[in-house]
Length: 478
Image (cartoon, rainbow, N blue to C red; front, top):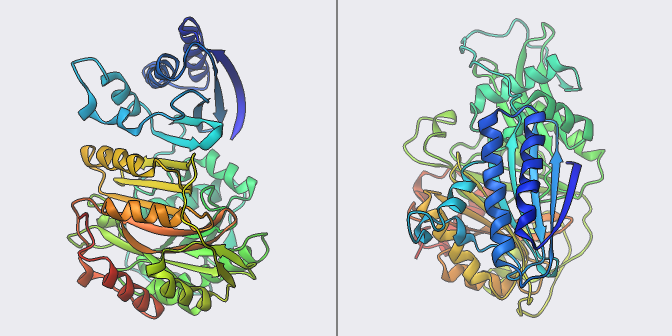
């Protein structure tokens, strides 16, 4: 994101109104309607007021950054007050003590499109809110016509900056996922083009000699897992599915990844049929885990007509990765060792389970998908209470699944694993290859146990699934 303004204020509530007026005025200039700009102001007001009133003892400064990516406006609020970070329970409606106390902060989170907290250890904390500018194109689902393509001479073409091609790619994504795809920014043409120009999103179309578009795939780079891009947004039209377009798109994606400075590629094939598992397996991916209940009830019809949340597998293909030092839980060491052997990745097991005094933890919520994502790059002593706050928030707000990634490259990983396990988290695999480290994956499924009998797992996915099932009990909170 581009920083378009930075405001540094001291601990003085008299500066609050002017700061908020600037943020609101800037939002209006960027195209926000009056009501939406006011909601952004409300959200920032509650966060800033909370930090000014509760995080300092008459000293300290807060840095407010306004960031822009053409169609996303973000307000980032950073400080080193005490306590170092806002307690997640501030968002929990159960902590509203009267008709007014605590209500404003609770509503503030619902005034914006996205929000999140990042614990930065000795660097303090960052709270951010994001709102999308009103630039999303209106799309209508294409009527599925069960007719053969005019010709079957297909090729793959990388999407450039031409707006016509970009809208064609967005339409493919929309026809497969509706507006439920987790990365909402892909529905905005200007944001899409900016990602393509930055080289962080490589969009691929499969089309024939009559320029009929049969499918789409993208190689997407993630901030959460740098140097480990994902092959994602696979969408093949139903009347084009017998021509091997999925395999063709994947192979083209591998070619693009091979020309980048990355550690490897990850994929998330579906676990209610084995087609995408077969494609990944035949192209050298290694199964490393599962994400159960990833697709929520409202969105499941996009994938099939089942009566449950749907599931994904995780797989990785690494490129000559250097030897890694990891701190895995002893009870899973043999299983993890087998995965590293299949990946062809050398590693050493470190010793020590002592957590750091200051952890590095961030969490965010995708409300439409009913998913909470937690990334712990350094386990702190307070992780148990932090997880309690996250789970309390999720339970009250009908979030149905929490996915957590513990960095195995940090000595506190085992401590974090044990604390998470006590809270009802289950082990579901690993995510190796990020430049930040190799991650242990755990999930908390709240009150939604896994229907293990409905999982479809083939090839090495079957071995991984069998192990996870054997160690996860009923696959729900204890």
